Length: 346
Image 1 (tube, rainbow, N blue to C red):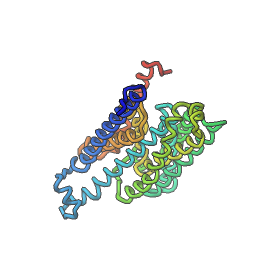
Image 2: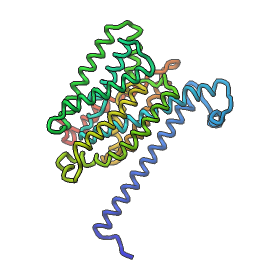
Image 3: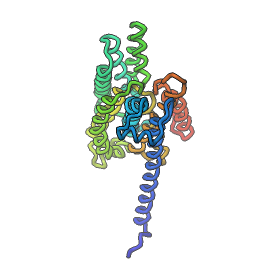
Image 4: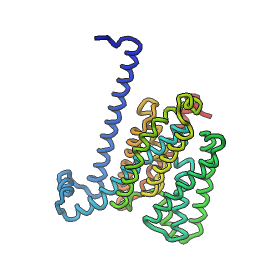
């Protein structure tokens, strides 16, 4: 039997070890996500034992506990899990494709487009519930299309798309501020609550729609992700490898925008999740991109932050975006500091 001790055998062994290491880290983080999901459902202001939880799932009627678990805690945890996955993948797609850790949907204007559209619907048309979610979805898509078209000049350069996106974000933020200052206090409060990103109004209907959207978008992201490594090398290198650069970029952008849009429509613009997930996932895998790891990181961030938000202040359930937003600023400073130390900063 031939020995695999030559250069080819050593390379194959290294790849095998890397795959095993990646698999073990993915499994460990998946376990963390499962634990956080269980913590959100079982613990908090109202605790449920594990046997009672399975009895409730089996149809047992436990006064009080059944309603709290099935209509409050469980749909909230499910939506938190799903939006974490969606935001995590969306952020990783943009950051890897544009080769910039700042290129997440909540920084380059896409989330701001959803916010501006949703606030317009709330303030000008008195929209609520599904109408606000639909407005956010449309707004994200329209702003993303505008950013792509304006930045497309002989091909989409990453820095140009980011700068155009930041410009759109500033305009959308100004529009939101103007609308809030021109409306009454009650409507402004509803708009601000939505802008913070919250899981407080989670329902099974919303969870079902979100799950159906992800059932289409996640396989699409998995297929299109094959072109991410090529785009990360730069357009010329990607074209030299036989990759259709513009078609791949457009497909990845469309999928990333759709993931961010449906997550925003379900829970509002939960701050910093898309921004945090990709870089943290890279650190966990030794600076290698992984959409699966980014998805798990996003889910862990949302589930952990929502448990803190729901239990930090007794008697008050804070919007989850308040907690995730508080994580974003120090992480940005840390990211800039480490980039400068390694000679990558400005």
